[in-house]
Amino acid sequence: MRKKLNIGVVFGGRSGEHEVSLVSAKSVISALDKSKYNVYPIGITRTGQWIAGKGAMQYLKTGKKVGIKKQSILPEPNKSNLDVLFPVLHGPFGEDGTIQGLFQLADIPYVGANVLASACGMDKIIMKALFIQANIPTPKYIGFSRYEYENNKNKIIKSIAKELKYPVFTKPANLGSSVGINKCLNSKQLKASIKGAFAYDRKVIVEQAIVGREIECSVLGHNDPKASLPGEIIPKRDFYDYDAKYVSGDSDLVIPAKLNKQQINNIKSLSIKVFKAIDCSGMARVDFFIQKSTGKIFANEINTIPGFTEISMYTKLWEASGISYAKLLDKLVKLAIERHNEQNKYQKSFLPSTDWYKQ
Ligand SMILES: Nc1ncnc2c1ncn2[C@@H]1O[C@H](COP(=O)(O)OP(=O)(O)O)[C@@H](O)[C@H]1O
Ligand SMILES: [Mg+2]
Image: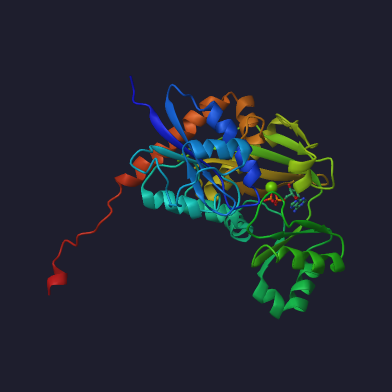
């Protein structure tokens, strides 16, 4: 019999998406095949404390900390026991490359995007620059830092008015779950919303609003990633804001989306293009708009750790494409190990062939 793999499922975290992560982690932990894996829950509290073992399971179920020992960076079971880490964390400190850096340093295979792809996927300004570089259509935008805005406010507002048409969306560059995002209909709202977005980040992006449909597509793989069938989000509110995502939960998910063959193929190939544009690995959900007036497809964003419950878009799209939730988890674990092995193939040191250094 093959040795069971020890999987550390990391959840919670210092992010506004803490609760969402707990929900996803519960699903992942219960669906991981116990005949193949020993599962170790590893919780991170809202203040960044790590909890392992029984305390972690308790925290996952109740949100309450009990018997936490002194904090350490990688808790017991320590790195020698864990074969794969599965970060089920959303937003800053989980999806942005920081924890991926820790896993990389600990030399443990981990599920999903590496440091670079996680960071590029998190920062909407860098992400869009990479889309444009790869000829991926994305809504027109202007990005700036607090320093730039404070020192050139009139110039920036003028260039937004010149380059974009109302309505526009304002977003903190590095967040998720629609936190700090606003739709603005005029310059008064624009100024107030930029100010609001700067409460969350040192960079803000202002984007042309696209009137149309919201389509999402799941991608899975490493060197040769594959795309699922696309799905559609139909928010009941003005846009897919925080409330629509987590509070009212009344948005409709249409799986698969009602699209023609050509649209499906275009969305699938664009999803893979987006995945590759940020050098992603493992999994990602790529989100699009289809403009009502033109039928044109625009890439909105890539999420390197999408919502991951059994009823989330990411997993449902794979189910509709023939990959069950448990199979998906198996594939992600396998991809994590594959990437780790691939990294270890490269020479880590350099010995010059001449002895110039002795001269
Ligand atoms: N350019 C845009 N045009 C139309 N709707 C948008 C635009 N940008 C964002 N939205 C709306 O806001 C929601 C959240 O924006 P998004 O960029 O996906 O941020 P997040 O990373 O927080 O999910 C989208 O799902 C969509 O409903
Ligand atoms: Mg989004």
